[in-house]
Length: 231
Image (tube, rainbow, N blue to C red):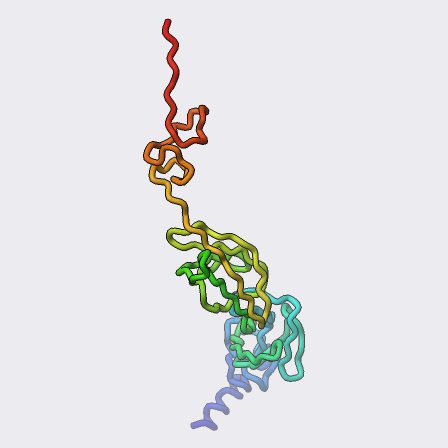
């Protein structure tokens, strides 16, 4: 049966039996791969791929060097590869990607994101630890509990430490790759303000009566009587 099929294909003028007749088949001894890309020339095509390098945080590395057997390049380099799995080496890390059949494509080599250890120790004026959290804004935005080590991306971060009953503490820190950075946040208790007028009770002459903010002795925390001129 197999010989009959081969003979039938040869008689039909299609030696590699890929549906492209020999007289127009650029590769009559190699079957077309029929992947939807240049299928009418009768040749199996490697995929034209652009290789890009990024880390697990999604940051791209335009100058990162990679190797693949005898091939080498940097992020953004293009090359032809047969479809299938290929293992690249980037920055000392192996990463395997699947190259699809068909039209030109982009493959992403993903490497581990850099990390450093960072911790905020929140304490009160007596040196006791305070249950607090911090929000850090920098290369990313992240929130963590205080008083424990956390993994963060290297770079400059603005850190805001908060805890119930305490005033926020704000500062700038720099996290270094593969190093540990620990800072201390001195948490001061929020002054009580029973009447909510912005004057702490310990300096408010009228802690139970809200200042009327009329431009007349507003710093004393007391509502002021208005003078009335009789006519």
